[in-house]
Image 1 (cartoon, rainbow, N blue to C red):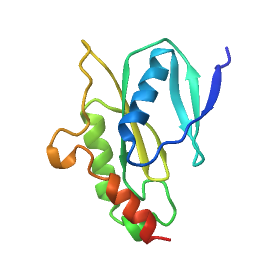
Image 2 (cartoon, one colour):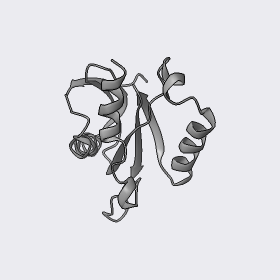
Image 3 (cartoon, rainbow, N blue to C red):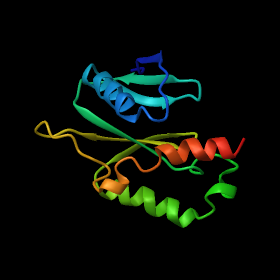
Image 4 (cartoon, rainbow, N blue to C red):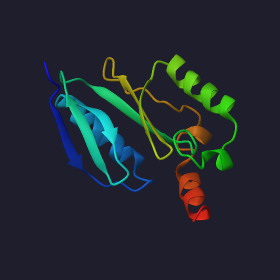
Length: 136
């Protein structure tokens, strides 16, 4: 049986994490689960069972960019970061230009949070803009 795949174009600014996460959750509730995202805002979804799935995004430069070694040379940190989030029950969906996409099923209507401390709730949004600007 072949997979049913759709592509949707949608633009979000780096500071619109909540809007992007909510849109991905709405797509999952309709049975469309994120598979890929291009640099130009084209999202690929695979059809499956409708589900209440929370998405979380984080920006970690270097996890999938060639010039990353100049920005974040510590591969051990990157491995630790991934394992920490996976151990917390999140599934890594994809990486796109440093953006990490994670998902986890919502249980009893309670949306899980990937970041729980005040300092870490949206830690890298302004950092992402600053790093992009400084690398130009």
